[in-house]
Length: 129
Image (cartoon, rainbow, N blue to C red; front, side, top):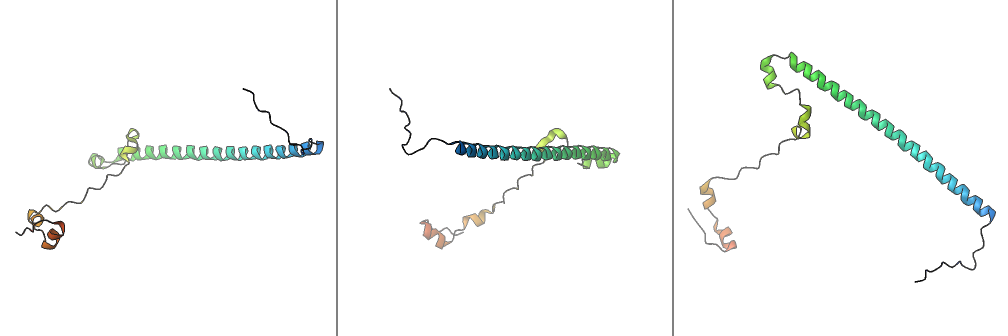
């Protein structure tokens, strides 16, 4: 099967030297702005990494201080105190417990009594106790 060749429009004039120079200048401006943007992104990433390292160092120091404080407590308070969180516990130790569901009414007398209006709407016979 033959491939189709793209036909040049008849009115399109060949590129002049001035047009090529303008196109090259536009490409250069685009490359310069892309380079500037890359440098900006790299600077932001460097600052973010530095902040992360500082936070990690502060957390390590805080755990160290908490461990030292817990060692200085009397034995009675050590059992009740939960100052030091083990590092291996991870995020599961930090999760909150889900609240328990509300208790249902366990009174059998309240369950047996059905109002006549509600019973007739459902099509059930009324039960009276």
